[in-house]
Amino acid sequence: MNKRNFMALSLATLACVTSGVAFAQAHVTRIIVPFAAGGAREALARTFYTELGTELQRTFIIESKGGAGGAIGTTAVARAEPDGRTLLMAASSHFVTAQLSAKPAYEPVQDFVPVANIGTQSYVLMISAALPAKNLKEFVALAKAKPGTFNYASAGIGSSTHLAMAYLLNVADVDAVHIPFKSTQEAANEVSAGRVQAVIVPNAGIAPYVQDPKLRIVGVTSSKRSSLLPNVPTVAEAGLPAYVFESWFGLLAPAKTPKATVEQLNAAVTKVLALDAVKERLANQGVQTQAMNTAEFTKVFLADRELMARVVKASGLKVE
Image (cartoon, rainbow, N blue to C red; front, side):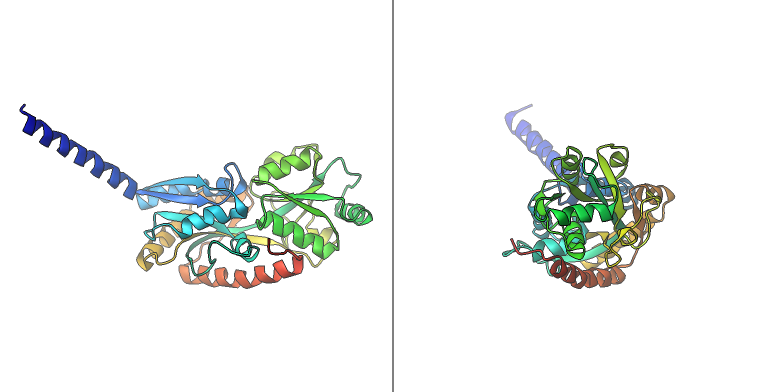
């Protein structure tokens, strides 16, 4: 083979490899989880992403980008190409993070388009078993007796775990110190170790904590008891009748993503959520599936912005 033919063959091979890489990348969709790996929201995304990939005949991968209460991962999606290949695993905290920032890196409505609702989830209030409190009323009484000396953990400033607990303390008229961590697991571990007195965690991933003798579960935040913890009262039943906190989960795409692409993704999610295996996995994580078309999800999305604004105000959270 002469030099000219060798060069031509090499260039052709390189072109094929480059083309193959580009083709592979075009068939990969990332679901960005804006919190640290190993958290509840990552586990939730993993309950349906394989089936979603099968339905759309492409590869879906889960990528965790934690930090800044979810702002880092969320901003990454806002700045991604609007081609349907980068999605955000979002929840109600989507609005809170931006509200609590003096200079938010993203605009929670204008920078995104709602793609598909996954379902709703409640949360669980856990306290350190080292405390001489067996239920919510006793915990509140202890905290009131020592204002400002109790600590509570969260998965980060502006996360749903932060908001849920701050809102509960406001309703209970309790003064406690917030200690943010990088993930729900890390926050729960601190309570188990006795270094922090309380934490609110999602139902998703609650199983490891149920058997932990160093943790005491004293209430669920939803309006009804959780099927995962039927013997645990709601926070309202346990002594704070004005308190309810639930969260939606859904997929968002960058603004300007073509409508046809959004509708295609929505239709695929709807089919996946109808699968018994997916329903069971989500139920095991405390999530009640609720498929919606794009118009319905957009309505829920925008209404939650107003609701979260009221909750933030009532909780007394400040811009940081």
